[in-house]
Image 1 (tube, rainbow, N blue to C red):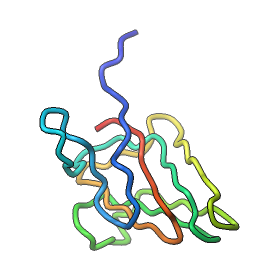
Image 2: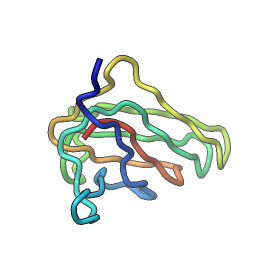
Image 3: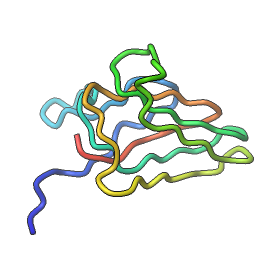
Image 4: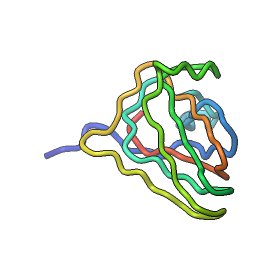
Length: 111
């Protein structure tokens, strides 16, 4: 069995925003437009932390584009790793992330 794609970690987000990766040629940050999201990791800054991922570019956060919603934490500094079953969740437009009561978040997947 051979591996045909590389699993990568996104750039860490500390506020809501577009999920990004590093361009391997230039080292510059660039938006992730197509992704197979496999794991979502976050750290709570308070109780009831939330991470939402929308399949879109931009900050509209359209409800029908919501592809992931994770809630966790009863206090600050609690960490949570959401491992998605199977091949994970596919986003074909982009990944806009909304953080609530969350210090930081990153996504592991193929992009």
